Amino acid sequence: MLEALQALQDEALDAVRASQDASALDAVQSAFVGKKGKLSGILRTVGSLPPEQRGPVGKAANLARRAVEAALDERRAALLAAADANLAETEWVDATLPAPASVVTAQRTGGTVHPVSALVRDMEDIFLAMGFETLDGPWVEDDYHNFGALNIPADHPARDMQDTYWLSDGNLLRTHTSPVQIRAMKRGAPPIRGVCLGRVFRHEELDATHENTFHQVEGIYVDRGVNVGNMLYVLRTLLREILDDDVEVRLRPSYFPFVEPGFEMDVTFRGAWMELLGCGMVHPYVLEQGGIDPNEFSGFAFGLGIDRLVMLRHGVEDVRHFMDGDLRFLRQFPGGLEG
Ligand code: DAH
Image (cartoon, rainbow, N blue to C red; front, side, top):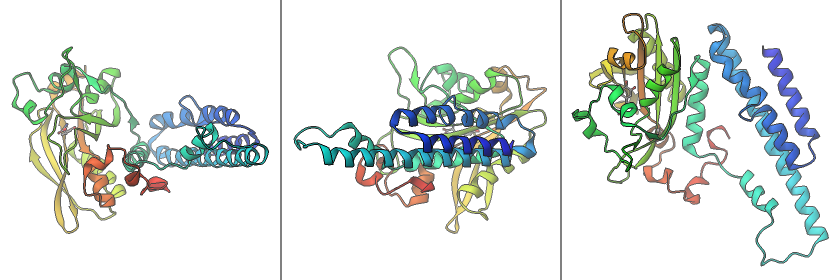
Protein backbone atom coordinates (compact mmCIF):
# COMPACT_ATOMS: atom_id res chain seq x y z
CA MET A 1 0.00 0.00 0.00
CA LEU A 2 2.78 2.42 0.96
CA GLU A 3 4.65 1.62 -2.24
CA ALA A 4 1.53 2.13 -4.30
CA LEU A 5 1.13 5.54 -2.63
CA GLN A 6 4.71 6.49 -3.42
CA ALA A 7 4.22 5.45 -7.05
CA LEU A 8 1.01 7.49 -7.22
CA GLN A 9 2.76 10.54 -5.76
CA ASP A 10 5.63 10.20 -8.28
CA GLU A 11 3.15 9.86 -11.11
CA ALA A 12 1.30 13.01 -9.95
CA LEU A 13 4.49 15.04 -9.56
CA ASP A 14 5.64 14.03 -13.06
CA ALA A 15 2.27 15.10 -14.44
CA VAL A 16 2.54 18.47 -12.67
CA ARG A 17 6.00 19.08 -14.14
CA ALA A 18 4.78 18.17 -17.60
CA SER A 19 1.81 20.58 -17.46
CA GLN A 20 2.18 23.62 -19.68
CA ASP A 21 -0.94 25.58 -18.77
CA ALA A 22 -3.61 26.10 -16.15
CA SER A 23 -6.11 23.71 -17.66
CA ALA A 24 -3.53 20.90 -17.73
CA LEU A 25 -2.87 21.60 -14.05
CA ASP A 26 -6.59 21.53 -13.29
CA ALA A 27 -6.82 18.12 -14.95
CA VAL A 28 -3.92 16.79 -12.87
CA GLN A 29 -5.50 18.23 -9.76
CA SER A 30 -8.83 16.52 -10.27
CA ALA A 31 -7.22 13.22 -11.34
CA PHE A 32 -5.19 12.94 -8.13
CA VAL A 33 -6.39 15.21 -5.34
CA GLY A 34 -9.87 16.26 -6.47
CA LYS A 35 -13.02 14.78 -4.93
CA LYS A 36 -12.86 11.76 -7.20
CA GLY A 37 -9.06 11.75 -7.47
CA LYS A 38 -6.92 8.68 -6.99
CA LEU A 39 -5.28 9.92 -3.77
CA SER A 40 -8.58 11.05 -2.29
CA GLY A 41 -9.92 7.57 -3.09
CA ILE A 42 -7.17 5.98 -1.02
CA LEU A 43 -7.75 8.41 1.85
CA ARG A 44 -11.39 7.39 1.94
CA THR A 45 -10.54 3.71 2.34
CA VAL A 46 -8.14 4.20 5.26
CA GLY A 47 -10.91 3.64 7.81
CA SER A 48 -11.55 0.12 6.52
CA LEU A 49 -7.92 -1.05 6.72
CA PRO A 50 -6.72 -3.35 9.53
CA PRO A 51 -6.11 -1.13 12.59
CA GLU A 52 -2.30 -1.44 12.53
CA GLN A 53 -2.16 -0.14 8.95
CA ARG A 54 -4.44 2.87 9.38
CA GLY A 55 -1.94 5.16 11.09
CA PRO A 56 0.95 4.71 8.66
CA VAL A 57 -1.21 4.59 5.52
CA GLY A 58 -3.36 7.57 6.60
CA LYS A 59 -0.28 9.60 7.35
CA ALA A 60 1.52 8.66 4.12
CA ALA A 61 -1.59 9.40 2.07
CA ASN A 62 -1.94 12.83 3.64
CA LEU A 63 1.71 13.62 3.08
CA ALA A 64 1.39 12.55 -0.54
CA ARG A 65 -1.70 14.72 -0.99
CA ARG A 66 0.08 17.76 0.47
CA ALA A 67 3.16 17.19 -1.66
CA VAL A 68 1.01 17.09 -4.78
CA GLU A 69 -0.98 20.18 -3.73
CA ALA A 70 2.22 22.10 -3.01
CA ALA A 71 3.69 21.12 -6.39
CA LEU A 72 0.47 22.23 -8.12
CA ASP A 73 0.57 25.64 -6.40
CA GLU A 74 4.20 26.11 -7.23
CA ARG A 75 3.78 25.16 -10.89
CA ARG A 76 0.71 27.38 -11.20
CA ALA A 77 2.58 30.37 -9.79
CA ALA A 78 5.54 29.72 -12.09
CA LEU A 79 3.33 29.52 -15.17
CA LEU A 80 1.51 32.72 -14.22
CA ALA A 81 4.75 34.58 -13.59
CA ALA A 82 6.01 33.49 -16.98
CA ALA A 83 2.76 34.58 -18.65
CA ASP A 84 2.84 37.98 -16.94
CA ALA A 85 6.46 38.57 -17.93
CA ASN A 86 5.50 37.77 -21.47
CA LEU A 87 2.54 40.13 -21.40
CA ALA A 88 4.63 42.99 -19.98
CA GLU A 89 7.11 42.63 -22.81
CA THR A 90 4.74 42.30 -25.68
CA GLU A 91 1.77 44.47 -24.82
CA TRP A 92 1.00 48.02 -23.95
CA VAL A 93 -1.03 48.00 -20.75
CA ASP A 94 -3.98 50.27 -20.04
CA ALA A 95 -3.73 50.75 -16.28
CA THR A 96 -7.39 51.76 -16.06
CA LEU A 97 -8.65 48.35 -17.19
CA PRO A 98 -9.53 45.63 -14.66
CA ALA A 99 -6.61 43.36 -13.84
CA PRO A 100 -6.14 40.45 -16.26
CA ALA A 101 -7.51 37.18 -14.93
CA SER A 102 -4.00 35.81 -14.56
CA VAL A 103 -3.11 38.53 -12.04
CA VAL A 104 -6.24 37.96 -10.02
CA THR A 105 -5.51 34.22 -9.90
CA ALA A 106 -1.91 34.88 -8.89
CA GLN A 107 -3.13 36.84 -5.91
CA ARG A 108 -5.45 34.04 -5.02
CA THR A 109 -2.71 31.39 -5.07
CA GLY A 110 -0.70 33.63 -2.77
CA GLY A 111 -3.57 33.55 -0.24
CA THR A 112 -3.59 32.22 3.27
CA VAL A 113 -5.29 29.31 4.98
CA HIS A 114 -7.97 30.49 7.39
CA PRO A 115 -6.85 29.60 10.93
CA VAL A 116 -10.12 27.74 11.57
CA SER A 117 -9.65 25.69 8.39
CA ALA A 118 -6.08 24.95 9.40
CA LEU A 119 -7.16 23.48 12.73
CA VAL A 120 -9.98 21.59 11.04
CA ARG A 121 -7.47 19.99 8.67
CA ASP A 122 -5.13 19.10 11.52
CA MET A 123 -7.97 17.49 13.44
CA GLU A 124 -9.21 15.57 10.42
CA ASP A 125 -5.72 14.10 10.00
CA ILE A 126 -5.63 13.02 13.64
CA PHE A 127 -9.04 11.34 13.45
CA LEU A 128 -8.24 9.72 10.12
CA ALA A 129 -5.14 8.15 11.64
CA MET A 130 -7.34 6.71 14.41
CA GLY A 131 -9.63 5.08 11.83
CA PHE A 132 -12.47 7.63 11.83
CA GLU A 133 -14.06 8.86 8.64
CA THR A 134 -15.19 12.43 8.12
CA LEU A 135 -18.92 13.02 7.79
CA ASP A 136 -21.02 15.88 6.56
CA GLY A 137 -24.50 17.07 7.36
CA PRO A 138 -26.78 19.86 6.16
CA TRP A 139 -26.64 23.34 7.70
CA VAL A 140 -30.39 23.60 7.31
CA GLU A 141 -31.68 20.86 9.58
CA ASP A 142 -35.09 19.69 10.66
CA ASP A 143 -36.39 19.74 14.21
CA TYR A 144 -36.20 15.96 14.43
CA HIS A 145 -32.49 15.62 13.68
CA ASN A 146 -31.38 18.71 15.60
CA PHE A 147 -33.49 18.07 18.69
CA GLY A 148 -36.10 15.28 18.77
CA ALA A 149 -33.92 12.34 17.78
CA LEU A 150 -31.34 13.57 20.27
CA ASN A 151 -33.80 13.11 23.12
CA ILE A 152 -34.67 16.83 23.29
CA PRO A 153 -38.47 16.88 22.83
CA ALA A 154 -40.37 20.08 22.05
CA ASP A 155 -40.97 21.04 25.68
CA HIS A 156 -37.45 20.23 26.90
CA PRO A 157 -35.60 23.05 28.70
CA ALA A 158 -32.34 22.07 26.97
CA ARG A 159 -33.75 23.81 23.90
CA ASP A 160 -33.47 27.14 25.66
CA MET A 161 -29.71 26.77 25.83
CA GLN A 162 -29.41 26.81 22.06
CA ASP A 163 -31.02 29.97 20.72
CA THR A 164 -32.19 28.82 17.37
CA TYR A 165 -32.62 30.48 13.99
CA TRP A 166 -35.96 29.08 12.82
CA LEU A 167 -36.79 29.25 9.15
CA SER A 168 -40.27 30.03 7.91
CA ASP A 169 -40.79 26.46 6.69
CA GLY A 170 -40.27 25.07 10.21
CA ASN A 171 -36.71 23.95 9.61
CA LEU A 172 -33.78 25.57 11.38
CA LEU A 173 -30.07 26.32 11.07
CA ARG A 174 -28.36 23.53 12.98
CA THR A 175 -27.38 24.70 16.46
CA HIS A 176 -24.79 21.97 16.92
CA THR A 177 -23.13 19.19 14.95
CA SER A 178 -24.87 16.49 17.04
CA PRO A 179 -27.57 15.80 14.39
CA VAL A 180 -24.78 14.21 12.35
CA GLN A 181 -24.73 11.43 14.98
CA ILE A 182 -28.21 10.41 13.86
CA ARG A 183 -27.32 10.67 10.18
CA ALA A 184 -24.18 8.57 10.72
CA MET A 185 -26.12 5.80 12.46
CA LYS A 186 -28.87 5.74 9.86
CA ARG A 187 -26.33 5.35 7.08
CA GLY A 188 -25.28 1.84 8.00
CA ALA A 189 -24.73 -0.77 10.68
CA PRO A 190 -21.98 -0.53 13.31
CA PRO A 191 -19.04 -0.30 13.62
CA ILE A 192 -19.52 3.45 13.14
CA ARG A 193 -16.56 5.76 13.59
CA GLY A 194 -17.21 9.23 12.31
CA VAL A 195 -16.38 12.85 12.91
CA CYS A 196 -18.07 15.92 11.54
CA LEU A 197 -16.22 19.22 11.59
CA GLY A 198 -18.50 22.00 10.53
CA ARG A 199 -20.37 25.21 10.89
CA VAL A 200 -23.17 25.77 13.43
CA PHE A 201 -25.45 28.73 14.07
CA ARG A 202 -27.02 30.31 17.13
CA HIS A 203 -28.99 33.46 17.63
CA GLU A 204 -26.44 34.94 20.03
CA GLU A 205 -25.94 38.39 21.44
CA LEU A 206 -22.60 39.12 19.73
CA ASP A 207 -19.51 40.01 21.71
CA ALA A 208 -15.82 39.07 21.87
CA THR A 209 -16.61 35.47 22.85
CA HIS A 210 -19.97 34.96 21.10
CA GLU A 211 -20.52 34.75 17.37
CA ASN A 212 -23.71 33.62 15.63
CA THR A 213 -21.74 31.39 13.25
CA PHE A 214 -19.09 29.13 14.68
CA HIS A 215 -17.59 25.67 14.31
CA GLN A 216 -17.82 22.38 16.16
CA VAL A 217 -16.37 18.90 15.94
CA GLU A 218 -18.71 16.03 16.63
CA GLY A 219 -17.52 12.48 17.05
CA ILE A 220 -19.42 9.23 17.29
CA TYR A 221 -18.17 5.70 17.82
CA VAL A 222 -20.62 2.80 18.02
CA ASP A 223 -19.75 -0.88 18.22
CA ARG A 224 -20.09 -3.87 20.52
CA GLY A 225 -18.68 -3.25 23.99
CA VAL A 226 -17.62 0.39 23.57
CA ASN A 227 -16.99 2.00 26.96
CA VAL A 228 -15.88 5.21 28.67
CA GLY A 229 -12.26 4.04 28.59
CA ASN A 230 -12.35 3.97 24.78
CA MET A 231 -13.75 7.48 24.77
CA LEU A 232 -11.03 8.74 27.11
CA TYR A 233 -8.35 7.24 24.91
CA VAL A 234 -9.65 8.89 21.74
CA LEU A 235 -10.17 12.29 23.37
CA ARG A 236 -6.81 12.25 25.13
CA THR A 237 -5.06 11.36 21.88
CA LEU A 238 -6.79 14.26 20.12
CA LEU A 239 -5.92 16.78 22.83
CA ARG A 240 -2.30 15.65 23.06
CA GLU A 241 -1.89 16.15 19.36
CA ILE A 242 -3.49 19.57 19.14
CA LEU A 243 -2.53 21.08 22.50
CA ASP A 244 0.40 19.49 24.24
CA ASP A 245 2.00 16.08 24.80
CA ASP A 246 1.49 16.12 28.53
CA VAL A 247 -1.91 17.80 28.68
CA GLU A 248 -3.95 16.49 31.60
CA VAL A 249 -7.65 15.80 31.31
CA ARG A 250 -10.46 15.19 33.79
CA LEU A 251 -14.09 14.17 33.45
CA ARG A 252 -16.89 15.81 35.42
CA PRO A 253 -20.44 14.40 35.43
CA SER A 254 -22.73 16.64 33.44
CA TYR A 255 -26.04 16.54 31.66
CA PHE A 256 -26.72 16.40 27.95
CA PRO A 257 -30.00 14.75 26.93
CA PHE A 258 -28.37 12.60 24.23
CA VAL A 259 -25.78 10.86 26.41
CA GLU A 260 -26.00 8.77 29.58
CA PRO A 261 -23.76 9.05 31.50
CA GLY A 262 -22.75 12.50 30.30
CA PHE A 263 -19.57 14.38 31.11
CA GLU A 264 -17.74 17.56 30.61
CA MET A 265 -14.04 17.22 29.98
CA ASP A 266 -11.57 19.76 31.33
CA VAL A 267 -7.94 20.15 30.28
CA THR A 268 -5.04 21.83 32.00
CA PHE A 269 -4.20 25.04 30.25
CA ARG A 270 -1.53 27.44 31.53
CA GLY A 271 -1.69 25.84 34.97
CA ALA A 272 -5.48 25.94 35.41
CA TRP A 273 -8.39 23.64 34.53
CA MET A 274 -10.34 24.75 31.52
CA GLU A 275 -13.71 23.37 30.43
CA LEU A 276 -13.37 22.15 26.88
CA LEU A 277 -15.95 19.70 25.64
CA GLY A 278 -19.05 17.62 26.23
CA CYS A 279 -19.10 13.86 25.87
CA GLY A 280 -20.67 10.65 27.09
CA MET A 281 -22.11 7.28 26.21
CA VAL A 282 -24.76 7.57 23.50
CA HIS A 283 -28.21 7.42 25.14
CA PRO A 284 -30.16 4.21 24.35
CA TYR A 285 -33.02 6.32 22.98
CA VAL A 286 -30.62 8.03 20.56
CA LEU A 287 -29.21 4.67 19.43
CA GLU A 288 -32.76 3.54 18.73
CA GLN A 289 -33.48 6.67 16.70
CA GLY A 290 -30.39 5.77 14.68
CA GLY A 291 -31.84 2.31 14.06
CA ILE A 292 -29.37 0.58 16.40
CA ASP A 293 -30.27 -1.94 19.09
CA PRO A 294 -29.00 -0.59 22.43
CA ASN A 295 -28.96 -4.11 23.88
CA GLU A 296 -26.40 -5.17 21.34
CA PHE A 297 -24.34 -2.05 20.78
CA SER A 298 -22.99 0.86 22.76
CA GLY A 299 -21.15 3.99 21.76
CA PHE A 300 -19.66 7.26 22.81
CA ALA A 301 -20.08 10.75 21.40
CA PHE A 302 -18.41 14.05 21.96
CA GLY A 303 -18.66 17.62 20.79
CA LEU A 304 -16.40 20.62 21.10
CA GLY A 305 -16.10 24.13 19.78
CA ILE A 306 -13.28 24.75 17.35
CA ASP A 307 -13.18 28.56 17.39
CA ARG A 308 -12.18 28.80 21.03
CA LEU A 309 -9.29 26.40 20.45
CA VAL A 310 -8.09 28.52 17.56
CA MET A 311 -8.29 31.59 19.79
CA LEU A 312 -6.11 29.83 22.36
CA ARG A 313 -3.71 28.55 19.74
CA HIS A 314 -3.03 32.00 18.28
CA GLY A 315 -3.92 34.35 21.11
CA VAL A 316 -6.87 35.79 19.15
CA GLU A 317 -8.83 38.12 21.46
CA ASP A 318 -12.13 38.40 19.59
CA VAL A 319 -14.05 35.51 18.00
CA ARG A 320 -15.75 37.86 15.53
CA HIS A 321 -12.48 38.17 13.58
CA PHE A 322 -13.02 34.64 12.25
CA MET A 323 -16.12 35.44 10.23
CA ASP A 324 -15.83 39.10 9.29
CA GLY A 325 -13.40 38.54 6.43
CA ASP A 326 -11.03 41.39 7.30
CA LEU A 327 -7.88 40.74 5.28
CA ARG A 328 -5.71 42.55 7.84
CA PHE A 329 -6.59 39.73 10.23
CA LEU A 330 -6.48 36.85 7.76
CA ARG A 331 -3.10 37.83 6.31
CA GLN A 332 -1.50 37.20 9.67
CA PHE A 333 -1.74 33.47 9.00
CA PRO A 334 0.46 32.95 5.95
CA GLY A 335 0.24 29.33 4.90
CA GLY A 336 -1.90 28.58 7.93
CA LEU A 337 -0.57 26.28 10.61
CA GLU A 338 1.05 24.04 8.06
CA GLY A 339 3.11 26.77 6.46
N1 DAH B 1 -24.04 19.37 21.19
C1 DAH B 1 -23.53 19.91 22.44
C2 DAH B 1 -23.53 21.43 22.38
O1 DAH B 1 -23.47 21.98 21.33
C3 DAH B 1 -22.12 19.41 22.71
C4 DAH B 1 -22.05 17.95 23.02
C5 DAH B 1 -22.14 17.52 24.32
C6 DAH B 1 -21.92 17.00 22.01
C7 DAH B 1 -22.06 16.18 24.65
C8 DAH B 1 -21.85 15.64 22.32
C9 DAH B 1 -21.92 15.24 23.66
O2 DAH B 1 -21.72 14.68 21.38
O3 DAH B 1 -21.84 13.91 23.95
O4 DAH B 1 -23.58 22.05 23.40
